[in-house]
Structures are given as structure tokens and as C-alpha cells.
Amino acid sequence: MSVSAALWIAGALHEDLRVPLWVVALGIEVIGPSAGFFVPGLGRSTTADWNVSGGHLAERCALFVIIALGESLLVTGATFAAAPLTPMSLLAFLVSFAGSLALWWLYFDTTNDFATGRITHSDDPGRLARLAYTYIHLPIVAGIIVNAAADEFVLAHPDGHTDLKTALCLLGGVGLYAVGVGLFKRAVVGHWPWSHGVAVLVLAAAGPFVQAWPPVATSAFACAVLVALAAWERRSRAQCLVPDSATEDSDPSIGP
Image 1 (cartoon, rainbow, N blue to C red):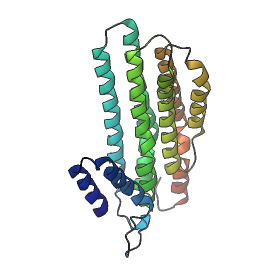
Image 2: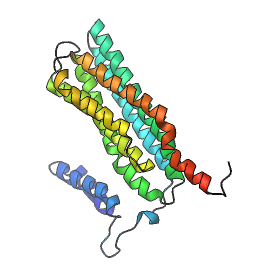
Image 3: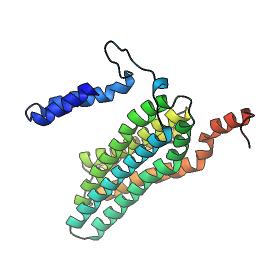
Image 4: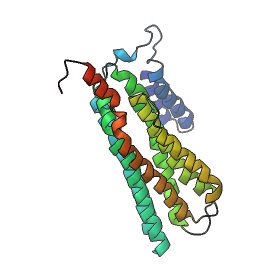
């Protein structure tokens, strides 16, 4: 942290070298947890050495996801307010808003609660903190950002044909988010939720066809995939908690 801090400060003071210095500083902080915060002469730590408050970390990451979703809604609202009000633009705004709600639903209704319980009661919360809450949240937030860019493209041109960049952002943003949440569930539950794989395959299969659709229709399709995935996961959420239940039943010290 001392080395990366020096690079952040140096980048702030030297405009010409700012980008490379900050890239190196960011790289050090990203690699740090996987390297056990290695320090020459002192060695590296293990995840069991880290004093991690699992519940607090889960809450912080959940709030970060909320901030990302809120910023995406601000972008959508600002773009909609600046565009002429037409039936197509209104429809595009409603679909974009529904998509943001579906993103929230998939993370907070089907994932966040049991993940918080897992890291809070884990024997090695540092391991889950490093994998699930440090690295795997990157594609989750990246998916939100790409989806926000897609909503902006759709609101700017809701009718006509879906161009390549809009299709990539619409399908790719939702796919990246589904993969990120799926990896998050795999990290905290121990198995990959195959419903997320089905959703990604559906999005990929639609890729060759959506360029003939209006952007608002492509957006509605991506939103429908998200809603279906969230509904599917809500229905099967009890299966994700089976390992916890089995653990409780096998431990006589835990009451009913």
C-alpha cells in the first residue's frame, strides 16, 4: 500500500506521467490480495491471517452495486430528458428502467442475502473476501456500466436497426452481469448455477438476429432474459441453501 500510495501521489503531481503511474498503482492494488500482500523480507500472508469482518464487507460491496445501479439510472434519466418525447423514446426509457430493476433483482433478491450469511459464518472469511468480494465483483459492476451505455444508445436511437455497438452492449452487458453474478454464487455456494449459463447461451444465440430488430426490441429482449433469470433463481434459491441446511442438521450443537 505504501508503494501504490507513492505512485498515486506521483501521478497526481506529474500530469505527463499520470496515466502510466496510476495504471501501475492500480495493478499493484489489484494483484496485492492474490499475492498475499507480499513484502520483500517479510514474505506473504494467508487469507486466514486477515481480520475480515464478513458482514461489513458484504454490506459495503452491496452498497457499491447500488451506487453503480443508481448512476446508470441517472445516465438513463438524463439521456431521456434531453431527447424529444416520442412514444418510442418513452418505451425505450421504460424498458431501460425495467432492465435496471431486473439487475437489482438478480443480485439482491437471489444472491446477496445467502452470500452475506456465508462470509459472516465462514471459517476463512478472508478467502471469500478476496475471491467473491474483491475480484468477482469487477465483472458485476462492469456489466452494469456496459448496460448503462447500451441504454444510452437505445434512448438516442430507439427505432431503426440495432447496430453492432448497441447489440454488443445490450447483449454483452447483460451477459457479463449474468456471468459475474454466476461466478459470485459459485464462489459462495460451491457450484455454478446453470441457469446463468442458459441465459448467456440465449443471449449469444440471439446475436446474429438482433441487428434486424429495432434497438428498443433488442433492449426488451435482453431485459426479458434478465427477468426470466431472476425469476428462475428466486424459484430455485432454496436449493442454493442446501449445504447450509445439511451442515446445521449434522451439528448437534445447533438448535432447530
